[in-house]
Image 1 (tube, rainbow over the protein chains, first blue to last red):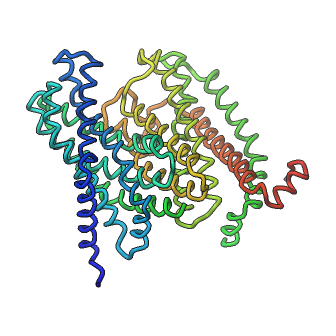
Image 2 (image 1 turned 30 degrees about the vertical axis):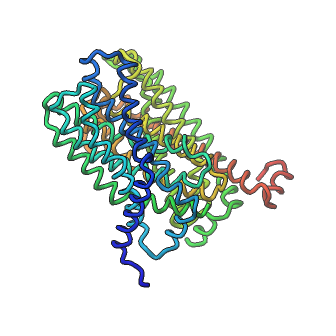
Image 3 (image 1 turned 180 degrees about the vertical axis):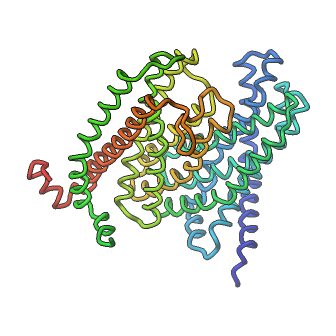
Length: 228
Length: 248
C-alpha cells in the first residue's frame, strides 16, 4: 500500500476528525448549548431592558464566542495524545504543518462555523439591530478561525500537562484580545452605520498571518509536549 | 571568537564572568539611578501645565521602555535555546520573565498614579494601557507555563514558543499611540527629528532610561546566577563554591 500524498492525507485527517465529532454529537452540541446559556446569563445579570442589552450585544456575543472557543480548544489534541495516535502522526513522514492545519480546520468547522451560523438567533434574543447581523456573522466567521488557530498553540503546549485547563486560558486569552477588539468593533460599527470593511479586512489580515505562522508554533508545541 | 561562544555554554564560566561584570555594573547602576532620580525630581523645572506631577515620568517611561525591550530579550533568548539548544539561553529566558513582569507592573502602576492628577482617572481602557496590560499577562503566562512543567527542558522550549508567539504584540504596543487616537500621548523622544521634550527634562530622562537598562541587566544576571546555582547544585564547582563560603 502506498502512502497518500500530503494533501490527500490532510483531507483524510480532516475527515477522520469530523467523523469522530459526528459520532459523538454531544461534543458538537455542547459549545452551542454553552453559548445559549451564557447569553441567558447577561439579561439576568445586567437587567432585561432591551435598549441596554442591545448596546452591549456586540461585546457579549463576541466574548461568549471567545469563551466557548477557549473551552473547546483544550480538547483538540487531548484524546489523540492520550491514545498515542498523535505520537504516530509526529513519526509519520507527512508534513506536520498540514496535519496540524487539518486538526484546526476540523475544530473550527465544529465550533466556530456553527457558532457563527447560529449567532443571528442569539443576536435577536439580545435585541441587536438586524442591520448588524450580517457583519456579526462575517466577523465571527473570520475571527473564530483566528481563535481556533491561536487556541491550537495553547492546546499543543499544554497537552502533555495533567492540569492544563486553567493554564491554557492564561496563555491564550492575551493572544485572543486583539481579535476580540476588532471583532466586536466590526459589529459596533455596523450598529452605528459606520463602514465595517476595515475591521473585517483587519480580521482577514490576522487570519492570513495566523494560518501562515500558527501551525508552525503548534507543530513545535506538539513536538515539545511529546518529548516531555 | 568560537572559544568565546563555547565558553558561553559553560555554567561555571558564566557564573564567574557575570560575577565580575556585576562587581562594577551594580555600583554604576545604583549611582546612575540615584543621580537620575535626584536630578529629575529636584533639579528640573516643573512642567508649565502639569506642575510637579509630571516628575513621575522619570520612573514611568524608563520602566515602560525596558519592559518592552525585556520581552525581546526573553523571546530572543528563547529562540536561541530552540535553535541552538543553548542551556544558558534557557536560563536567561527564565530569568528575564519575572523582571519584565515587574517592570510592566511598575509602568502600569506609575501610569495610574500619574493619570489621576492629569487625566482625572486612575485607569482608562486606552490602546496603550490595554496593550501594556496584555504584555503583563504575556509575561505572567510564560512564568505560569514554566512552573507547570515538571520536565524543565520541555518547560524552556514551551515557554520559548509561547514568548515568540507573543512577540507579535510588541510592535503593536509600541505603535499603539500612533495608530489609535488615544488619551495616552505619543512618544516625545524621537531618534529622528526634533524631540518634543525640553532638553533640561530630556537629559535626566535619558540617564534614567540608561540606568533602567543597566538595572535590568543587573537583575537578569543575578537571577541567572541564582538559577545556575540551583540547576548545578549537584556539581563539583557549586559544592566547592559553597565550601569556600560563596567567594568566586
